[in-house]
Image (cartoon, rainbow, N blue to C red; front, side, top):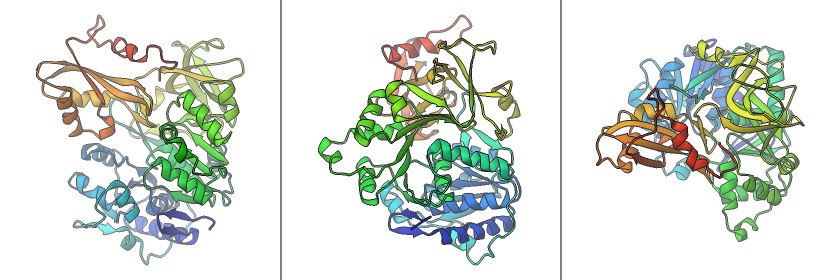
Length: 510
């Protein structure tokens, strides 16, 4: 079973994956994909995601996953920004964006597997448009690629910023030493052994996100057996842990919340003693949920803090989480953290400032076509995620707030500026402010406060308008119509005054 990837009743052996990957590399090369080109992956977690990612590595291209919840205009923005020459896409995801795919992009269609179609209630039938090709036909009978791979480009993830559109994190090519160091950091941070042939892990989160992407590819590279959960379901995950004797997984705090909401008699039905290492990150975890999960699953739960740009920075063990409530841990692998004030000077221990990170042997990156944005986040070689926090006397990091307005909901980065840009175009809206508010399940959810020119405009009208232009997860759950929004002397909306009442009495601000 070593090295298998399993989805529903389908099994992909390591031998078949290796062959398919080499054939896909040849197919991409013969389709005009060369060094530093991008191949877009508009896929749910499925076998071709692993194969296409590996194929890109073999020929020196960037695999560029796209969030398949995006609307056509959002997806098309990324396809254009990364200059994708090929998009590999599940058949049910193609129709909504088909007419928006830029001319000249080769469309390679993966039939949506039955288990994914059932999980999402979608049609698995394939209607192949003119000029498109099936993935199986695309790689069939190709001579496997045998040339030595060039310096690795890795995956170019588009990450949510604080202004404008998402930015692609484009890493410099990594030589063998740099790749080995980066791989070691991923293994150490995620708790996945370099030789992962003995582990059995579940992939619960979408691999268009940077952490599940790195986790899944690392586990596969090390020979682990990977079970793809078509769509997260709390009791189904417990069943998988029990029946499959799972040992490792990556989750987000929202999954903990949903697991804890199961009735006690349901939770008691399943044996979770096979678990060795369960790591979570990507969003704040409610302290009470963390404690309940450790009480239930044991001291196998870890947490990390990091970002697409910086990778994994800190890790928290179960023991540390219980003794230092709220910490996101200590730096790993030689990482160094500084807390700086607005003048770029270090603040005393225990005082809040902006969190800056330095990693040894870090492979540099830029934001695709946005070098200036990359330079803005660095001071003396230290990079910031825009988070505010402090270090205690033991060197443990605590987060206080975000310097920017980015919202993390259920592990997904969302930036209000993008939503505000769309919302201001809604008929009847004069001005608006979008921000994050506490949410027991998702950590944060979105709220929008709006000044209107049309008194008859209702919150549901605003939400309906936004759904036409944005993915569902970007549509604020709470919409408030205000007579007037508070403003600074400059006329700029004083967003903090609107946001603060929602967080009053909360032990955290993110």
